[in-house]
Length: 456
Ligand SMILES: Cc1cc2nc3c(=O)[nH]c(=O)nc-3n(C[C@H](O)[C@H](O)[C@H](O)COP(=O)(O)OP(=O)(O)OC[C@H]3O[C@@H](n4cnc5c(N)ncnc54)[C@H](O)[C@@H]3O)c2cc1C
Image (cartoon, rainbow, N blue to C red):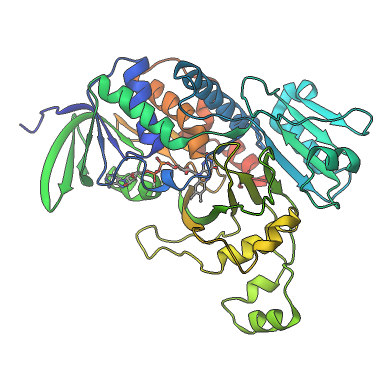
């Protein structure tokens, strides 16, 4: 009995990443006997908190290649399913009050590598009008980046922005998808081919051929034998890694979002996902400032804060909902502990977001009824690259640490993990994301020296 194989592959975690691994194993490589193990509903933990944005803008070409590959795969699914995954492409607009931000342009060139010359277009005068993708159709949008350096041009293209915006970097191969629909589509395909989801928690593993997985469900214990195992446990990646005898270099950082009905029409429905890159000191009244500064738990709110505040219309073009976020927290916490949701977050975020889109200031202190405030963990390595590939024990793999980009990268990570598992050919960038990269001292030193890790 000890050597019985109950499933060819056991995937720990039914988040978007575990589901994507199962999808590519079963649809591309004919591996039908896949068991996805999770005590929760599929895609209900971190994967349900995603802002569902995607982009191919990164400080390093390897991450650009990974997300370009993922976008290719998502486009194939959108085309095959009559766009079940609701893919839009209005781009990411990175905005700053700085004129000629040479560092940002240099970063674009580094990220796009040899193709940068062709992909980056600079617009310095208002002589020609600039029309950002009105329809949002992913098939119609161009690739590359448009850099708008003329304030008049910017105002005509993005009328809701404050007049002090001097430069916009409009990343064009970027937009939104429905991550839940993507996961559901993949799960349906896995089930059609014989894969299954087991509602149980992994509580221990005995390595060997096969692996013996100890499972717990409603207080009852059981065992499962599997020839291969994938750790896709999201924020519990380190804990499941430890069961496999690995110390995975990840931490979990809680990030938050809000969404509400924009009854006042502050945000145009055609506005791209817009990110204010500039740091700021929030505008408080003198009295508010004194109160906040005198309390050690709120004193940070009167100090200068980092940029990266983002906002976009959500849902259909005729809809009214908008989504906002700001990943300003950088203190790791325990994903098994109390959820560190901050009741001040909606107010802080709205004040900060009003700097770029002044129409939002009408909501400060009076969020519409029905507004939602939620959060989840960015499970991250120090360099903000994922962990995808073989672990030390033969037959064990990891697919995780997808930080704030797991919805957009899940398809590529699923594809790469499946290729590692069946021994299929891998694209050149695969080695960058395997845990074995930590043995490459030159690469790790170069990553440690990077000024940006692409955290949004
Ligand atoms: C606020 C926020 C905004 C985000 N916005 C974006 C965005 O705009 N675009 C984007 O691409 N990404 C975004 N992300 C990131 C994205 O949501 C995550 O990277 C992605 O969902 C991670 O998926 P996962 O499958 O690795 O983890 P999860 O979805 O957390 O799934 C892991 C699963 O593993 C299970 N599990 C854990 N331990 C065990 C065990 N012992 N036994 C069995 N099962 C176990 C859990 O129950 C869980 O269901 C955002 C994240 C947050 C928090």
